[in-house]
Length: 427
Image 1 (cartoon, helix red, strand yellow):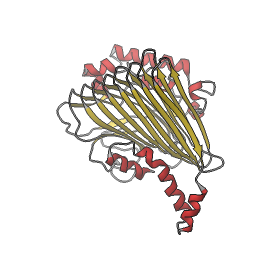
Image 2 (cartoon, one colour):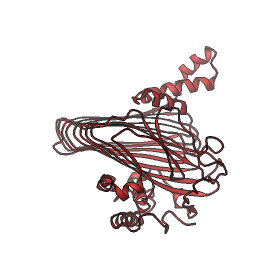
Image 3 (tube, helix red, strand yellow):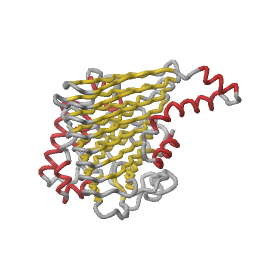
Image 4 (spheres, one colour):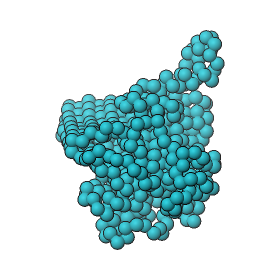
């Protein structure tokens, strides 16, 4: 047992460019380390629990075994094969390792385990490690140091995926302080369209500690459309850190929505580069929390060309002694004229000890642009509670109804009705 950076035997140690990429990740994480309060991007979210020295890297499971004693990736017991109620292609991971699936994808849709793509796919080598900038991102650097497990998804030119592709990441840590990394690479070629859903969940000992570290690298080609949804529902003593790095070409559209409701420390970070004229991004999120949790939503959207558009709406509900964090930056590069960027964060505090830290930012280096940002927080309306209770609704039910109504408009940002309805059930 050791800290986050361990000597691990990884696949592909005979591939020079892969070894160089891993070595770079190791060097950067060694230099940066686990960020503390003096690091601006992390001053509100302090990942102290990640300084522990008892992390255990998972071992690849036997072909027909499960560490929790049930059948391999079962539908019962520990929940290792939990599905979600969507008509979708499903990819399952358990403790960071992919379970072999037998999906038959349409022609023009390539889905490969990351190691297999590294070994034989030129597009994988072209993009892997090129979209996410690890120089100032310690956990992305750490993910790169362990680069091995994940999935490569390529949607060919003009192809429209007929149903969502769902990546289900199950953790069953038991009494171990488990730590694993996932790297996913998505390439949307010109004119293609797809929906991708990430779902992180846990079954097992209630007080298990573990750390999930995820990096998604996403390339959206000309006039391509990607709708990317995520639900993070990890154990209440877990840590979950995720970075989605996205580049969007001319006319491309990217929609991101994340629901966070689990983990002791959860951070969902989205960094988008609108590279060419007409590129668009919508980055929305909702979080609901209690206890002592800290849930962090961090976004950086860079408008690098004229006539680009971005919009963000983030809403959170915080109870107990929990803390919600929102950090959002819109950057308008010189000459990125006729650009529009909008950002809004709203939070509902359900207790006197709940906390919200909010840091919206605008960096504008061009004229003739439309930009706005705003933030607000408040409590439940006592008059509305009184009215509902006077109509025979008990206080707990009245509070639940008001909380759902508060989050409803951000959930409506999810275009897919089946995904939206499923996310509502997770609240």
